[in-house]
Amino acid sequence: MSSTNGHPKVLAIALDAAEPTFTRELMNAGRMPAMASLARNGQWLKLRAPAYIGSGSVWPTFITGKTPTQHGLYSEWIWRPEIMELERYHGRDLLPFWKDLDQQGVSVGVLDVPFATPVGLRSGFEVAEWWAHDSVLSETQFGPTSISRIVEKALPHPLSFKRQNAVKPDDPLGLQQLSADCAEGASRRGKLAETLIQETNPQLALIVFPETHHAGHQMWHTAAVDHEIYRGKELSSSGALLADVYGEIDSQIGQLIEKTSPETVIVFALHGMKAALGSPAFLSELLCARGFSYLLDWRSQSWAERGTSLLAGLKRKAPPSLRKSYYRLAPPAAVQQVARPTMLPVYDWARTRAFSLPTDQYGWIRINLEGREAKGCVSIDRYEETLAELEAMLRELKDINGLMLVRDLVFTASSETALEHRLPDIVVHWNDAAFVPGLRIAGTNIVAQPVGIKTGQHALDGFCVIRSKQKLNSGEPLLAEEMGHLLAQLCRS
Image (cartoon, rainbow, N blue to C red):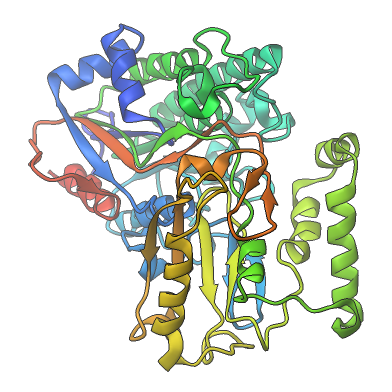
């Protein structure tokens, strides 16, 4: 097979974590004319991905065509029960659907799909982490070698030399610069994608814009100024900063369509964005307070565990200026290496029935299960009972004003499947009350502060706009795990 008239048959563009409602508002206001034109001449469909597990499940599901229970991924940091430690996700064990297409003779071009690493395509192109919001690699990787000139000649992304998530929500100048950097980065990304497509002529070109994700986390309060979660907070709401980023990406979408003339165009977002203010981080302390987790005291710790405890304490007590300098100057790989052993407290595994995994949004709880965890203490016949105890405690969780803290609970396994399960056993979805600074939890001595400076968090709804000769059934939402099959089908039709 070859591209029709030297042009891709399918141009697929992903706007990472772009919010459907916000996108439609900008389309209706004339701020995203390319998207509006696609919607008029095509179809607007709902798209669902397993964002209810965590944003780290979304892209692996798209990449592999498998559900989270099958691929087992949910975060950049993965729990390894066989060693009772966290491990940084590396992506090398994911087989993307485009590798199968490549082996079938369909040429594919891929630019910056989150959580994906190069797999050695025989034709087309693959570029990973030219710039990424979620970094898996320590540097840009690409193939084949024939595109090295294109990649090396491209102007770098303006955010390539800046620390991730570094702009505070009350810093108007910093937010303006972030908006400008994201917009300029999207412009350079569009030009790089255009050159790669024109030089290699793939039948399927898959281009991801992560700028919507990055900007949304730090600037959502500028798009949802009146949301109650922001009331009384000193936040900068200067201008249409996030709209400017979306608008520039829309411009690049229009130019890519015009310059590459694809038969089919798909623009999609696997999940969206919503208002938040940092992330709740009290779950580990709560599980200790309620007798599900226990920490080893100093005398019971090994010398290695004492070293980990000391390092974690020093990190918590370090002045903000020192932490800022450290994150700015230290290489990302070194930061991750130092962070890994301090991300969990030193548990007394013999008494710990359930423990919290580090997360940037939802609460994640793992049962310390015999036969699965190397130091498990909960037998499989008590798995469901332990889940029920946790559920009863969580569903009654309130702040001192009586506001419920838990909105929903997701149970990802049963006693029949738990022994092979790699996901958290419980995913806790919080109500807005859980994000309040100085949160006091009723019935405990816990006073909790949200961590991080994000004003936007992942939302569940995604969308897909498709212009194609082949009409899709719009009665049911598209699923993330079906997108690869859909793109392959469109390439062959």
